[in-house]
Image 1 (spheres, one colour):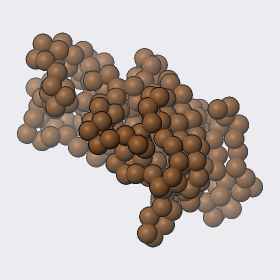
Image 2 (cartoon, helix red, strand yellow; image 1 turned 180 degrees about the vertical axis):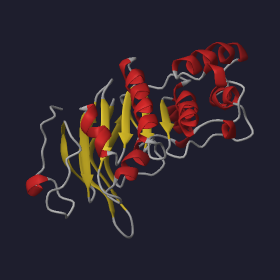
Image 3 (cartoon, rainbow, N blue to C red; image 1 turned 90 degrees about the vertical axis):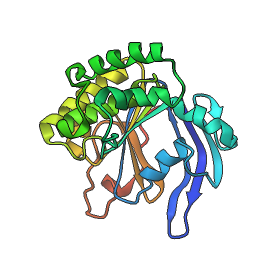
Length: 243
């Protein structure tokens, strides 16, 4: 589904990623964790082809994207939904219109929109909010709208960038249960987070990035450091996940 093969991306001030190789399979639910500036955002931007790798190969759904022409990028992104910490809803559009907009920009027919939007609003549990505007919703409801918009076009991959960062604990868990439900329907989920409690309780695959390198890749916990210096126990790279 997503394959990085010896990928490096450097910036003037720091290394984004250095010689990173990883495989995320179809249907995986992967947490990407690590300190600020570790390379998590670089990882996401490379998948979306918002930035170019300096070297190495990146494949998404079997397609090499490092050599992909610019005209092909919109098609790539149609298969990748993304949810942000700050929701990024259109304030002057209703819930229905926000979700429908994601279909309109790829020229889906009005008939398809009328069929798909109510179905996805039902899936995320906000059918009764279809005619409300973002400012009339709670933060949890706004995030549900953002998720609905991200999955309305049936993407193969959903990237969630700190989706619970602005939510209270109870609402955060509601969103996590929703993401797990979406994952069980076959969508691959890559979630960047600092929420140690969520990662520890979910028991999913955890990929830890530090200073541009993958330092841990296994099922289990967040992997809180023990020496106060951002390193994982023993400072060792753990790779118990079979790729």
